[in-house]
Amino acid sequence: MSDAALLDATENQARAQVALKAALAGEPSHAYLFHGPRGSGKRAAARAFAAELIASASADPEDARRRALLDPSPHPDLVWLAPTGAQHMVEEVRERVIRAAAYRPFEGGKRVFVVEAAEAMRDESQNALLKTLEEPPGFVHLILLSSEGEGLLETVASRCQAIEFAPLPAEVLETELAAESTGADGEEIAAAARLAAGDLERARLLLGERGRQLRAEAERCVGAALECETAGAPWKALLDDAKAAGEDTEAVAREALEEEAKAGMKRSAKEIGDAAKRAGRRRRTEILELGFELCAAWLRDLAALAAGAEEVVYNRDRLDLLRSQAAGLNPARARQGAELVQETRRGLELNVSEELALEALFFRLESLLAG
Image 1 (spheres, rainbow, N blue to C red):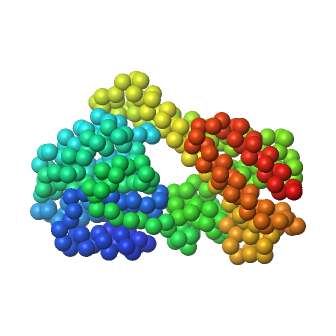
Image 2: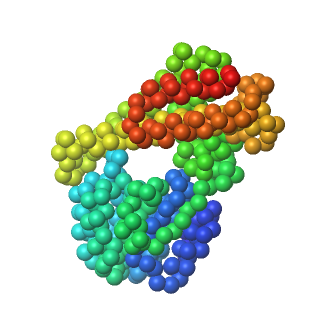
Image 3: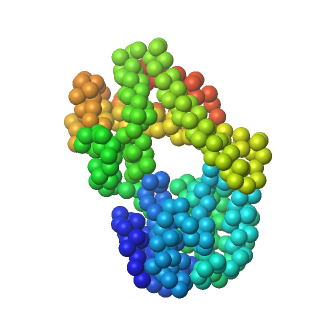
C-alpha cells in the first residue's frame, strides 16, 4: 500500500501519523474525529486517509487513490462536505451524508464521508447524524474535522475515534511560508509564524494585505495608549477592518450559494441570504478577534523588551519601534495590559457593544501604561 500522501500530510503530526497508519494496518474505525487548531493539517490528512481507505477496497488502488486525492475529488465514493456559510445547511447534511450513507459504493468496497468544520453543524444536524455514527453500514467511514471542539455535542464526539492534531511549531510555519511566494522577507515571515500560534492559515493571512493592515492598526492602537492619544479613537480602524472582511466574505458566500442553487441545490432566497450573512458575521468576528490578539502580542513584546528578554519577542520585524516604546516602560504594566486586552476580547462573547468595549479598553490601557 502506498501511503506517501498520508506521510506527507502528517509529517509534522507524529501522534496523528502513528494512529492513522495503525488504523490502515488493522481494522479502521467507522468514525473518526480529527481535532486541533486551524491550519494544523487536519484537512490534508483527512483527504490522504480517505484516499487510502477507498484504495484499500478498490480493484485498481492506484487509480482510486489518485482520484480521491484530487481537490475537489471526482471519485464518487468520497463525499466531502464543507460549510458554504457560517453553518452547514441541515438539509445538506441529511441528503449528502445521512441518507447517502445508506447506498452501496459506486465502484469499490468503501464509501468515505468527510465533514469539514463539523462544529458548524447545527444541533439538529448533529443529533440526526447520531444513528449513522452508531450503526453505519459496514462499507461506510465518517471523518469529522473540528477546530472548535466545544461546538460538537458530546454524544457525537464520543462516537468517534479521536485523532489529535497539535499546533504547528513556529519553525515549521517559517519553513512553509518561506517556500511560498509571499513577497515577505525573513523577519516578517518569522513574526507571522510566531503571531499565528500554530495556525498556518492565519500566518498566510498575516502576510497578505489585510493581515499587514491589521497588524499596523493594532500597533497604532497600542502606540496611541502609550502616548495618551486614545481620544482620537484609533480602535475604530480595527472595527472597520473587521467589517470590510465580513462584507467581502458575505459577498463571496452569497455568490457561491446562488451558483449552487442554479445547479439544482434547493435553497430559498431567504436561506441564501441568511447563510451568507452568517458567513460574513463569522469572518468579521474572526478578524476582530485577531486584532485583539495582535494588540495583546504587541503588549507582551513590550513587556519582554522592558524586562530584557528580546529573544522571546514575536514581532521580530518591528524591533526598532518596540525598543523605543519599551524604553522606561514598567514590564508588569505591559503584561497587565495584555491581560486586559484578552479579558475584553472574552467579554465580547456576552454581546456587549464592540465599539464601547474597545473605547473602554484603550482608555484603561492609557491610564495603566501612563501610570
